[in-house]
Length: 141
Image 1: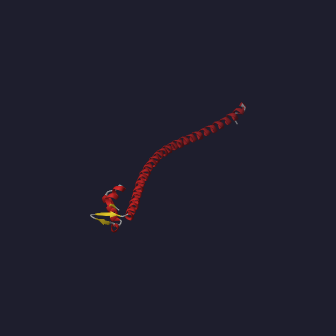
Image 2: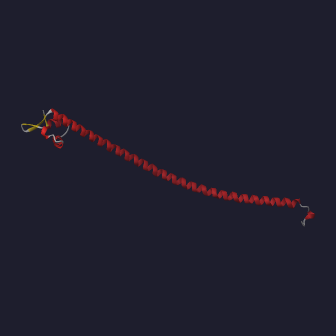
Image 3: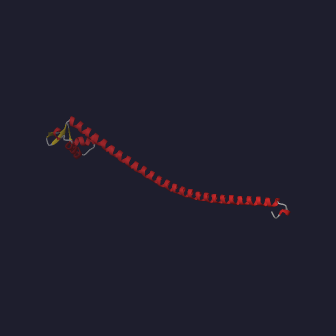
């Protein structure tokens, strides 16, 4: 049999923490009083070790969850920054597309003007050829 203090020292907890764990888990009835101190039998010791083990596992899970949350927050911030950068790039591409469409419109207008000029030149050439083929004495026709 061990005292609460001896068990606390062995497990690396304070005497108060062990006492609170016994109380919070309703294990006070398992304590034996020897003189002016409470003694812990082997069965209660095993129960306490199991409870404290579960508690430390819970603490480890909490620490792991906190670490995971921090990593997730960092990852989220990274992706958020990446999205902002992609939005800027898309905006720049939109501007470039708009400029290229304007140039394309101008080119189409110039091409249409050139076609009209070519058509006019062709018509003038046809008229010139028809004038050239006329004999000088047939100028009245």
